[in-house]
Length: 297
Image (cartoon, rainbow, N blue to C red; front, top):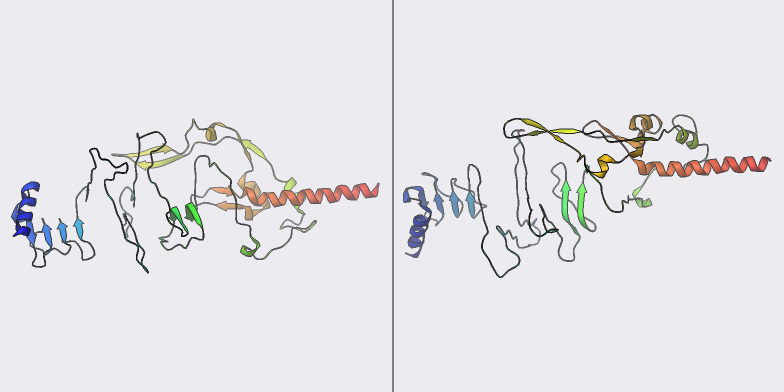
């Protein structure tokens, strides 16, 4: 009787007629599923599936949750997802998925986060943090559908794959250089020939430093009715307005191809950190030449 009363009140509130509501003999409820039998405990516009207690299908939004009003709590949520951690399981509090085996559509976002116009400094599109004493990362990004990454420390962000940034990165940049991570180690020695048959000093002297400004690049984006071009760089930014100093990748590739990389877009980039040992070796070779000249006087 209580169940019938609940369903009656639910239908009255939501305006759903009994013709659109079906209760299976298992107690599972379906709304607007026709003559089909609900599989989830509550199924809306679809029979659902056995793995989901609630299954909602919609043409525009499957579920819209809105939080409003005042409360005594300083933490308020439109949706809370909690997965109690159990041993031997990948426990996910909230999952977003947008995928089709055949490429189609304007875009696919697994998770889209937008935050703004709250207290200055406290607006986050996506926020992630670690909790507890175990290794992990606040935010992790991978490529190639890699969803099983064992992180050997605690990081704010951890990425497996290429990372591209169109503006400045603030902080100290460091690279793994532990001997235990390397093989085929060979010392750069004075006079050791390179692929060009000359020593390191001579090849460094062939490098041509240049100064330059960034050229604006444009990316195509699907607008509401037509394809539009969006600028890659903010032309008011310091990165775009200031002079830059460096090398031309195509030129360096002739001398040290191992220091030049080709991106997915076909553009070339330079491992500038890898040039530092060459400069050190050049100084050593130059000093050896100076010492030899001094000894011959």
